[in-house]
Amino acid sequence: MENNVSVNTKKRIDWLDIAKLLGIFCVIMAHQPINQDVIFIYNGFAIPLFFFLCGITTSNKSIKIDIEKSARTILVPYVCFFIISYLVWWFPIEFLRHPELWERSFKEIVLKPFLGLLVGFAGNTSYSTMVNSPLWFLPCLFWTKAVDSLISAIKNKTVRRIIIAFVFVLSVILFKIKLNLGPFVLLVQAILLYPILECGKIFKKYFLKYFMDENLSLKKRFIIFVELVISVALFCLRTYIEKRLNIVSIYMGLQGSWLQCLFGAVSGVWAIISLSRLIGHAPKVIMTLSQNTLIILGFHIIIYLYLIILLEKFFNINFRTYIPLGYSFILTTVVLFLCLIPINLIKRFCPWMIGSKKVK
Image (cartoon, rainbow, N blue to C red; front, side, top):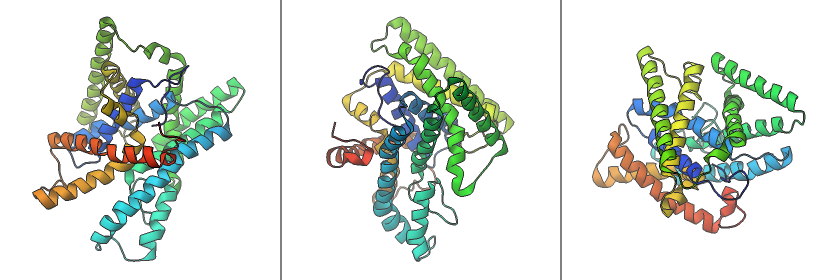
């Protein structure tokens, strides 16, 4: 969700932006009470997709520069979005409207949300409250990039490769033993996701140059379409096998089989990349959305929840317990376009909130 530039130029790669938009579309749908089978499919590839794409757009310089950049472009947006979510949604709507859920105490009003900000855990615990659950992605990404920066700073290539291989093995071990460190769970998640980010960097180094064609020939489009069909078929096969075996493999949920998670992640990510390359270009408004998925991540849940309240109040439609897939698709599209409001406001008046130094 960071700046997307090509290997040798400052020009954005359109299909990378479109892939992120497709991913965030799935994220918005998955945060709705839709059919669990659809959420199950989403869980197989969405999170690995974003970390793979982040790997493609990562350029290491030094530990100090890398961490300063990550703090500016990841932690600053995280803190700003958290505070905004607290002020415009959680406190006035969620907290005050549901006295049966929250005690009226300093601990509930201030302390637990503050600890939720520090911990970054997606859900609520006995000691913390996450006022905007999708925001867990940002501190997790920060720690993953911090691990990557530390490893990339090692000058000796042999030692660096050994450590990378060790972290790959460690991620498999952590997945298999289902380790949960409570408040430090993000550190475990960072190690789990580091191999995916590293795969994105490897893809950028050796293969991205073959994916830079802006105008695809008919032959290349056909090849990409075949890749899309094969990757979707493999992903569906993985889903079918898990349904037959009654297994639920969720990468970040530390559930199911690690190999099944890997199989689903690779096939799902490749399907999104293939589809994005086929789309190639899109109207300006779509590209604006695709280039600002960070802001969409921070605001989509607030906009969605307010829409649900309005639908209940004025149309007597209850979408709190279940939303049919077709309606979810429409609602997700509406939420995406409403995200243009915070996108334009932030980029015009406070670009520092997303790590930008000037309005683009």
